[in-house]
Every structure is written in structure tokens, then in C-alpha cells.
Image (cartoon, rainbow, N blue to C red; front, top):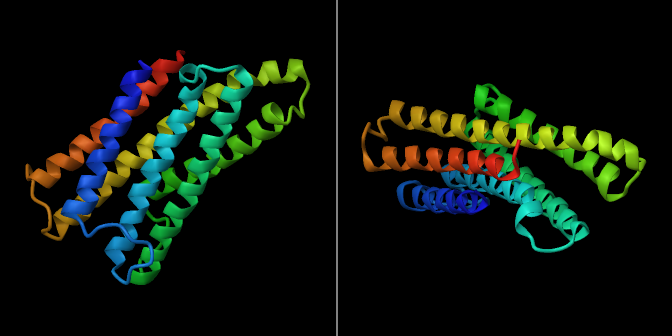
Length: 208
């Protein structure tokens, strides 16, 4: 199952790049073109999702001792957090450039809640499991909840991505820049499916 998770994760990354570079205006945080600035957001937020998923898979896919797998798990999550911070900064910058209100949509609510909870989950994991501030029995008790929380946050992140794609599709359609069954429309749909299947197979790979 982990191979399928890797596969769909990479496919989603490729499709997203094709969409942003070929059909949209490209990706550039410091551009004067607000649309190029905005495109940093979906690109890096998917990077956040992808690395978070790979971090979850690290315990199954890295042929090494548990201590090493734990270190990779935490490091990938940390890099994901950094990408997420830049990705969120990009969309706030775009909104400021276009004088658009922040955090008004369902997508933004799910996204910001997911990211904040993800940060808290990472700090919790660092303190309790990496630094071992808690006793062995306590760590054993909270580990199942830590795993469940990680899976829940993964699906919340996927949900944020799907609602984000739907929101962007609606904007483009209302502006007359996107037509139903057009190549770009299909590309967006396939990107969403790949992201969804990535999340599904990450979950299947780590069990229930």
C-alpha cells in the first residue's frame, strides 16, 4: 500500500505543477503579478500534505532502527510546517495585494485549523516522544491517540486541499476563464483525485 501512496503523491505533484506552470501564470513569491504569488500557496500547501504523508509512512518505509525512523518522521513534519508557513504567507500576501478579506471561506477555516492543530501535534510529539519528557507508561498510553490525531489531521489537510481546488475552480468558472470538460478542468479534477488517493493509501499503509 505504501508504494501506491508514493505513486499517487508524486502523480498529484506532477499534475499540480502542470496546472500552475502551463495553464496558470506560474509560481513566484516576490512577483508583482498577484496570481503568481497566489500560486505559491497551492504548490507549497500540497508540499505540506505530501511531506506530512511521507512522515507518517516513514515508520513503514525506512529500513532502519526505530530511533532513526522517529527522527526522520519528526524532521519531515518540521519541513512540512516550514512549507506550510510560507504557503499561508503567500495567500495572505495575495489577499493584501488584491484587497481581499482573509479567512472567510470554508476552505480557509479548515486549512488554518488543520495547520494550527498540526503545529500543536508536532510540539506534542517533540516533547513527549523525542525529548521523552513523559514517563514510559504515559508515552505508551498517549501513543495511540497521537497516531489517531495524525491520521485525522492528514484527512483534514486533504479536505482543505479538495475544497481549495473547488474554490479556485468556482472563481475561474465565474470569471469565464474555465469551461466545463475543458482540459484544464479535467486536470484539476485528476489532481484532486490523486491527492485524495494519496491520503487514502497513506491511511491504509499504516493500518487501523
